[in-house]
Amino acid sequence: MSLDADDIRARLGLDPNEEGEDLLLFVYTLPTDVKPLFPTIADAQWHSLFRPAPPGAKWGLTMPWPEIDTEPPRPEVVHEPITGAYLTEPIKIVRARSQR
Image (tube, rainbow, N blue to C red; front, top):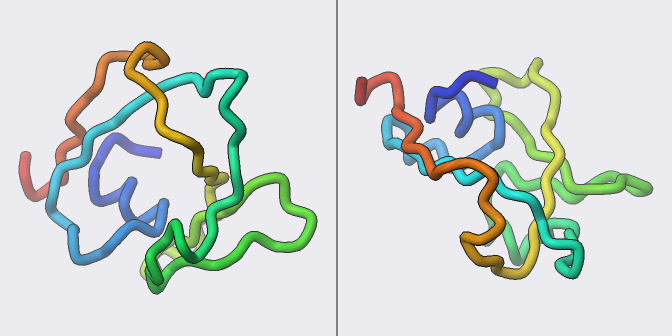
């Protein structure tokens, strides 16, 4: 996946109304005592691109924007808040093409 905010947003099925905005990239390791959970419609807040995970899936799956619907979905989980102590890289600003 490229480090372009709009490309990331499109591949992860994030809100297209935010196209052109930068993103913050957090890279972290989930602590062993924090359980990864399936995303639900409550987590998605009725987002139009949310789809429940298929039966038997080990995790949720993102749904790319229709313009790139040939791209495969990406694994997705939600979890309880964690602290910055679990960051494995410095936080980065990922710029949108239009902001460069």
